[in-house]
Amino acid sequence: MKLFNLQLRQASPYLSYGVLILFAIFCLFYAFYNGNNCASASVTPSDFCKRITISVTNNGTSETNAPVRIPFNPAGMTTLNYVDSFGSQALASNNLNDINYMSQSLSSTASSGWWFIMPDLDNAVLEIIDYYVGDLDQTAWRDNGFYFYNNNSSTDDLITIPNNANFNLTDNFNLEADVILTGTSGFTCPVGTPSSDSGFIIDRWDSNTGYALGVECEQGVMYNFILIEDTKVRAATSTFNTRYNLKGKYEAPDITLLVDDVSVATGSKASMTSYNNNITMGNGLRKVEILNAQISKNITTTNDIELRYNFDPTEVKELTASTPYYTGSVDDVSSNSHTGEYSLNRPQNYRITISSATGIGLQQLVDNPQTDDQIFPTLSSGLAVVGNENSNFPFYPMLNSIATTSGLPRAMTFGGLFAVLAMIISSIILLATRTIPLAIFTYGFVMYLGYLNNFYAIWYVLIIVFILVATYGSSKYLSEGF
Image 1 (cartoon, rainbow, N blue to C red):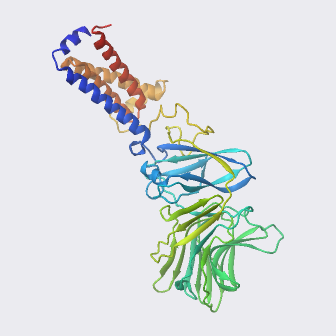
Image 2: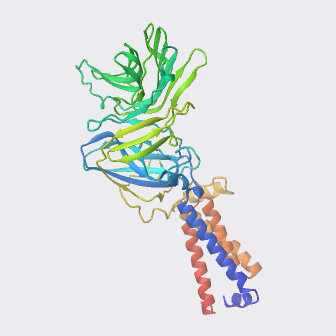
Image 3: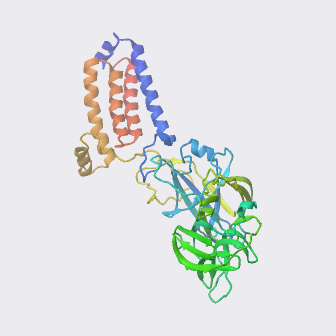
């Protein structure tokens, strides 16, 4: 070390110190950039950048498939690349099962409620939502839908579309929606009760006048139906927790009910009169999610779309939130400007804790996440974050064979191999240039290549480089070797 120190005095000390400072800035930039910004994270279809742990405790009566309002700053979610401009790249899980949620007000910088549908919320029982975000491979696409709850302690969740003359349809039109039914539990239809409990998906009907599309339960059986004035055409369904397309078609006098474009029931109505009123969605619906809804007219000629809701996060906006009442707007994407207004009455008797976003590792896959009921992130949550190994790296089959058969943890094996390689190359640089800072830089660069290929974590690189720099710095300070 003394010999190298004497030789280094012939070179400019500012060059040596400058190399060390630049290298330190370089390492810190990548360490904190990768650790806190999803844009630089290595992700795969099953790997996400961050996990947000949300704990929910129900302080009221036990509920099933209940919507829980989680306040987010939507614009902040997109700025951090947690979700994209369509609200995708994210997935929510509860007890290893995916759960649905509705995001909204995606461009808002104010707090807005995203509604997570909890399968089971028993009284005084802690439930965990693992919210995984930042899949920048853009493989976690999701279809945002509007969930109508309407439990016994709340009034109807409702969307109201103001009356318009273009809704005065009397023939040659379709009513259509993609829906998910959770089952019959939300409806009042015990076996042996002759009356039906109806819920309307699209509703411009009253007292046997107008038209409607919906679902109903009677004597323990769920039905899909279309109403054309006093004529109802329906068919039983057992399609629960699965998306399906429901369509009602009227071409006088024929009425056709279709499920996934297959006719399931037919009826007849010679003619119908015009009924002037608002259109509503969700009236009487219980635990039903609508993913999109559409009204088409002139279906045998020009097939014009008069109204369509896709319920994308950019099209649904929360306007007021005063527990338990919430209101907002829903944009019509048909270009006919039939903007709807939603109103919700959902008592939120829950205690909610939202943790900071933490990095997740290879073993915390979304498809099979770890069961973790801790509200606060663990201290080691970011120390071993790696993505999938780069199998195209030169000599990877040989390296993989060594790591597999060594009996040591893979990261430790790869780290040792790259440490040896870095030592050899940096020794050559040192002999050629007689510059210790450059040799340290070369050592760190080789180790960093291993991190870039996801063979081990960035912290392993930083710790080794810190030891080298500290050793060199202390020898410089003491002006002698060890």
